[in-house]
Image (cartoon, rainbow, N blue to C red; front, side, top):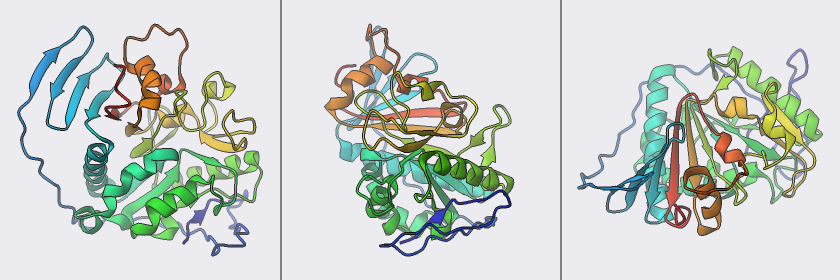
Amino acid sequence: MGSSSCTFTANLRIHLSPLPQWPPYALSISQSAVAKPVARSLRLKRISRIGVNYKKFEFKARSSMAEIATEKGKGKVQVFDSEEDLAVSLAKYTADLSDKFVKERGAFTVVLSGGSLVKSLRKLVESPYMDSVEWSKWHVFWVDERVVPKDHEDSNYKLAYDCFLSKVPIPPGNVYAINDALSAEGAADDYETCLKHLVKLSIIDLSQATGFPKFDLMLIGMGPDGHVASLFPGHPLIHANKQWVAFIEDSPKPPPKRITFTFPVINSSANIALVVAGAGKADAVNVALGNSQSSDSLPVQMVSPKGELKWFLDKGAASKL
């Protein structure tokens, strides 16, 4: 078990976080070299499509998935018969983008969130992706993290490690965890310094349009209240537009101390996948995409990337559209 612990001082000296129950987490950053990609893409069988026009939506039915055409700026929406079908499609989508960016720039920067999102990545650890994806080119980050030890049940790192990272051969030095020995403010500052250093090394792209880091793919979930990352409804941090990484000590959802990417960073991504499953999130999905008359804006509605936004919904999450 291991990761890079993003810990920098002003002169970029490396420290190790004290992790009493875990192996030490050393920082290992190197310029990725372009390797010949070996990815094999899956060819999905062709399925007949039936168009059904509604007042605001166009459904294109498939055997296990329907596409919804939304208003401009809301992204492409796919609704799957089950979370299992969603996970199958999400794996292919992620593997295809990995192949694309490894060919283009020799690296693939992926941002994860916590919650059920990580479990939806389970198909990536199966055939054909275990052998076809160039895992050595992956660089993994978190859109938000709870400031708790890495072996704590609330840690997004632990969740990702247990469900995904421990099953794929991504080099430990390419997995960038927070320094949980610091305060929330210190951990946020440290993570932002880490990101800026990786931009200088050209591991992370920099958006010429915004001046913020441009990750290749951001895989994020959404809470029942419409929050994304650790950006909650009505919280001042949703309006933060200077920092790359902010801290929060009064999260309305425990644990209270967290770090989070700000919306300018989220929206500078080349690709964002919003992965939402379960009927408990249907109200927030309806506010974001449907005919809801609610006057309250949700954080998820502020996800509006410069690149491509794609929603992955199961039937439960889309049940009120």
